Image (cartoon, rainbow over all chains, first blue to last red; front, side, top):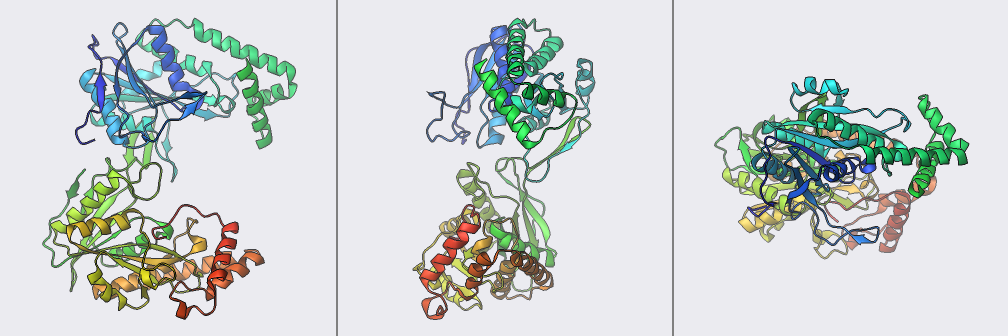
Length: 276
Length: 305
C-alpha cells in the first residue's frame, strides 16, 4: 500500500481488552453476518472504524444486488458497555496479507483485543431439525479447555486437499498467533438445503455461545420468532408436499438422498421459505 | 517484500535460469531437471506472505498447527563455464483470480528476482515456458526463443531446433509472453540485463489439460545445454518424455475416430515459414484447430499466444 491510509478510526472508546468477533459476507446461509447483525442491533453497537477498500477489492465498477448498487464494506463496530468489537466485511479479492494485518492493527493497536472469534458455516447433509453443532479451531492450545464447557467440538483434524485453499478465517487466526493474539475459528454445519437461505437455528447457536461466555445479556426473542416462522413455513410445505417431508425424514435417520432428490428438496425448500 | 539469503557465495560469471508453473509445466520441468541433476544448493528465498494466499493448512486436535505458502526459492551451482543460479517459483503472483502473474505484486516479484540476479553479478537470465503450437504429440517440440535485445538474435538462431517469432508463419516477428516469463524479460531490459525466454512447444489440443508435457521440456533443456555450453544428463527427462508420450498415445487411441482423424492431420502441420509447409494449407490448419476446439475445452491462454 506504499504507506497510504489503510484503515480509518472514528472517535474514541472505553474498551478494556475486549473480544473481537469477525464475520465475512458470502458465507453459507449468510451465517456470520446474520449473527453479527443480530448482535450489533441487539446490543446497540456503534460504528467505530473501517478498512479502506483500495488495494483489496477491484475498483472496476459496482455489483447490483436486488436492484441496488453495492460496494465492498469492511467495518468495525463496538459496544463499550459489553466490551465487544465486531468486524463485518466483504471478503477481499487481493492483498489478503495486508488486509488481515490491517484488521489486526485495529484490533491490537486501536482496541487492544484479547481474543478473536471468526464465524463461518460448513455445509452439512443433516436435516434442519438436527441440533446445530459448534466446532472450534484454536490458534493456541490452552484455549481448547476454556471452550469445552460450552458444548463445542474441539478435537477436529483436517488437512486441506490439493487445490483447495485455506479459509480467510484460518489465515486471520494464524496471523493473530504471530502477534500473540488468541484466536478461534467457530464453524456451524448448516443443512445444504438452507445454504442460500437463512438458518436462524445456526445463528442462535452462535449468539447463545457468545451470550453464555461473555454474559452479553442478549434478548433472543427476535431469533426465536425467526425460528418459529421458519418452522411454520416448513410445516406448510410438508402439508403441501408429503414427498418433501419424507425426504427430510430420511435425512433425519441418516439416510442419504440421490442427486435428483437433493436438488428437489433444496429447490422446494427455497421456494417455500422465500415466500414464507 | 524481501529476499532472505541463506548463503552468500562468490559466484563466477553466473547465469540465472528461472521458471514458474504454466501450461504443461514445460519450463518448471526443464529447470527442475537441470537443478536436480546439478545438485544445486539453496541460496535464498522470497518471503511469500505479501505475494501469495496460503496453500496449506494443517489442523490437529482442533489446533491450527501449520499454514503453508507457495515457495519462491533460489539455488546455486558452481559450474565450469558459468556458475548457475536457479529460481523456482511454485506459483505466479496473480491478481483477480488469474493463474498468470499480473499487477503490482508480479512487478515487485520480478524486481526481487532481478535484484538477486544482479547481487551475484548475473549478466544473462533465462526464463522458460510453453509455446502453444499446432503440432502433434508425436512430433519433436521446437523451442521458440525470444531475447530482450536484438544483439542476442544471432546467437539463438544458431542453436539446433530453435526458432524465432519471425520464423512463425503469419506473425511477422510479433507475439506476447504472458506472466512472469515475459515480465522478467521486460524488467531485465530496463535494467540493461540480457534475458531470453525459451519456450518448448506443446500441442494446441493439450493446452487446457492439467498434464505435464516433458517433451517440450526436453527440447528446452537441449537448447539450454547448448547456450550454457554444458553437458546435461538427459536420462531422467528422456524417461519422463517417453512415459508421457506413451500415456498420451494410449489416451489418443481411445478418442473417437473423427477427432483422431483431425488430430492426425497435425502430424503434417508446421508453424514454420511457408517454404517448409507444403503438406498443409493455412485453411487446413484453421479448420483443424476449429474442429479441435469443438471437442476440447480450451482454458485461458498460454505463456505464448
